[in-house]
Length: 204
Image 1 (cartoon, rainbow, N blue to C red):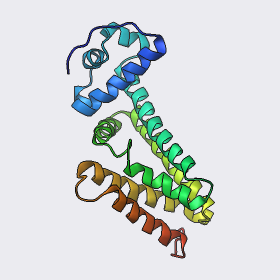
Image 2: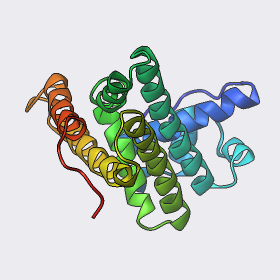
Image 3: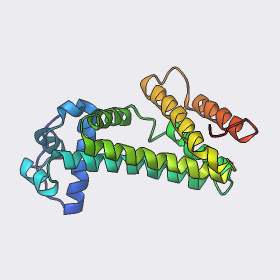
């Protein structure tokens, strides 16, 4: 990374630039490469200014995790909104949005991997990780309910579909030449069709 000149900015803009810089450093260097110095250099600010806006590096990383999760949530919501009022297309839109821009991005995967590694050793990050993934599963569960999946089966169906999407998304980011986003959507679509069109799915 090259050092950029320090610049003046409004407080909200400065906070946003620090968060974006943290996401970029995490993607490029991983959790081990994150420091006040590397983030400050990437954002073009002094280390003291970083400490002015955030109560330490852990707080900045946590805020970056929330920001990244919100970016994903917004992309999913936009996809669902564009699908119209019919529950099935809305569910498919929510699921298949993970296979296109801006979510199916190797740089975003690198950032998530850094977050996951931190969640293993930092209780606060682990709690935040659980919150973000619970929110995603809740979105799937709500759409499954709209599609008529029995209330007693929604939780496990949402867990299963989340795992399927995560696996396909991970493979698309790691090895994009193996299969296409359209093929990933087709796999997810067949799973959803089997669930909604008569396959037995009940809580144990």
